[in-house]
Image (cartoon, rainbow, N blue to C red; front, side):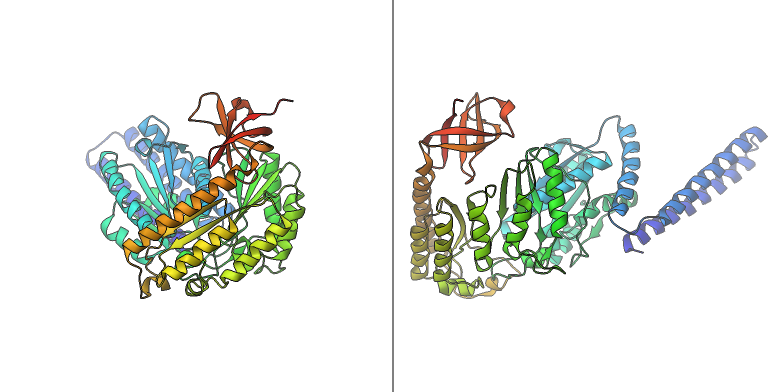
Amino acid sequence: MSEITAGIQKLVFGIFECEMLCRRRETENTESHGLCRAEKTRRQQQNIMREEKLQYDLNRLEAIPETEPERQQYFIEKCREVLCEKETELGRPLRFCVTTFGCQMNSRDSEKLSAILEKVGYQETEKEEEADFVLYNTCTVRENANLRVYGRLGYLNSMKKKHPHLVIALCGCMMQEKEVVAKIKKSYRFVDLIFGTHNIYKLAELLYQTLVQKKMVVDVWDDAEGIVEDLPAKRKYPFKSGVNIMFGCNNFCSYCIVPYVRGRERSREPQEIVDEVRRLAADGVVEVMLLGQNVNSYGKNLKEPISFAELLRRVEEVEGIERIRFMTSHPKDLSNELIEVMAASKKICPHLHLPMQSGSSRILQKMNRRYTKEQYLALVDRIRAKIPDISLTTDIIVGFPGETEEDFEETLDVVRRVQFDSAFTFIYSKRSGTPAAAMEEQVPEDVVKERFDRLLTEVQTIAAKMCGRDAGTVQKVLVEEVDTQKEGYMSGRLGNNTIVHFPADPSLIGKIVDVYLEESKGFYYMGRMRET
């Protein structure tokens, strides 16, 4: 029996004993006050019914399913019962607000969490001040991410003082750090629920414990016990969806906290993934994004190993799916087989995010990236030889400990030679708990800032040129949303992930249409639909 189940049982047994004591005292008081026999009988019958109900609840509690997802379905129903009573008390629906910090993995997790909250009876709102349940799905890649969460908790505390029934929950990568949890337990005692990255599927169970116990619940696991399938899920867009294919990371880059908070790599079974994609296609999804910290190492830890390239072949066979994307790829694991599959595919988008981090082989070694500048450039050459029109994007860190001007010039050299369509550029910041945080030769702030500005100028100049290469052509565009900047216009994306704005009707959202790209604006296009 799990600790949480035992805790809930202990709590309910305590309630049972208190109820029985109260009933006995009530009976004694009734007899001492000389109430009429009819009234005595009525109260005795009420007490018997209450005892029977409590005993029934205990019996049901002892029959909690041990297997997943049946166990969580049970707690979804239990939460619904409790929340229904609260709605009656308040005379209105209960609302929830989920705020996501960090990467696309977190965004996908938040979709799952939101679906569970809707199943238990909450309605979604984007305004925290309207919510009865607020959940922060946290990121901890950088120290600033932690500070943002602490700052916003102060605001939630003021909200809770005005609305004591407000439930505040924290989950995600930040909660995997023991010192963070200790700080929250000590300084933010108004938080009701804390859980990590490995047990988000247990939200209904944890929420029920929180609602019944009415004190802080903390359930953070060091490692995952397995991958739970067939739980509720929702999507931000009805026509596209992320699909987790694996969890965790084994790379241990010296600057990165992810392996410590997301755990070791765990791949889903390929048939589970394909089945999920089929269900999405049947529900109107035309584009899927396969997600993992390092998708290129997918399948290596399965009982029957399978390559990521083979998984892509199987996903491509799903009818109704017109576009396939994936991220993130680690350069050291990107195989020639994958390049061949991408080149031959009619559905895999011609876009590859290939984090470089640094152009200096010396710095790459200190980062524990396990490839050199020369190997990265050779990989790019192989990719472009097979897929000439591919859009390459990357991540670059400036100011890693020990970086010299010569090292930085090596990074600029790679940027100029590869000609990235865009790059996410970051100033290195110490991340406690990682090897890089203890490294000597931290680069002075003014030097880092000067290098960062130079890099940004170079990246933006090249990106503007690369973005404009399709001007004057007709391209397929997935219509995503109404353009908020220009009335009567829609916004969509090319296969290479570039945004296009063009005059159209909202009825086209979710459809792939032909658009003539009239003008490049540096990082996006203005276009018009091709007349048929």
